[in-house]
Amino acid sequence: MTVCFTTERMLHFGDCDISGTAYYPAYLNILNGVVEEFWAHLGWPWHEIIWKERWGTPTVHLSCDFSKPSFFGDKLTFQLTVTKVGKSSVGLKHAIHCGDEHRWSVTQVLAASWLDKHTSMPWPADVKAKLESLMAPDAPERRPVGGPQPQA
Image (tube, rainbow, N blue to C red):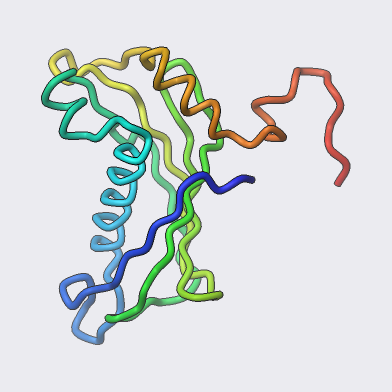
């Protein structure tokens, strides 16, 4: 799949346990910052959509797989891929590396939500169009049903 956003984060002292190993709750906080940076990169910074437009993008599903530990001082590279865009949701895949070494991966689903009503909402048309433009042309969600399937 096509990576559409890449950023880096350094693991700080407060992100690690007493042994210097990254602590998974800190990982999730870092991941949230990456997602916030992604939305700003797209042109919809959270401070504007939350305070002015009154909608947000809460996580409704999260699955993590940890391959190898990371340590205080490691620089992690986060690669984000849009995997699916629905009426009011977006699927993301995150691959996190330290140098050439894979450290952890995440699948995540965000939902568009009215903050005052606490209900889902359809994506604004411009947001949906931008998210769809980031999907790989060969993504399963872009192939017509019954259309040619890629060769394995």
